[in-house]
Length: 95
Image (cartoon, rainbow, N blue to C red; front, side, top):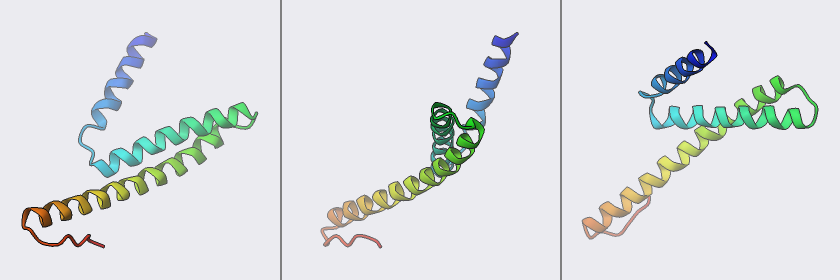
């Protein structure tokens, strides 16, 4: 019975994330990684893992969102350089 519940939960988690944008995926991934790291880190130092998971999730979500903004800026600069090279114009990075 436990295997069926675990498989069902995994399938629901995977399908629930299938229609997310890159920003949403990176924010949720950061939150999950942060929650895991926070819970484990707090448990190692004999704290309350719940509070570690909550704090880690908040920090991870913010980090994931900031990383997404960085990747979008990086893609924008690449595309500007590509277009400038394609049109034989000097590259001006967008700011």
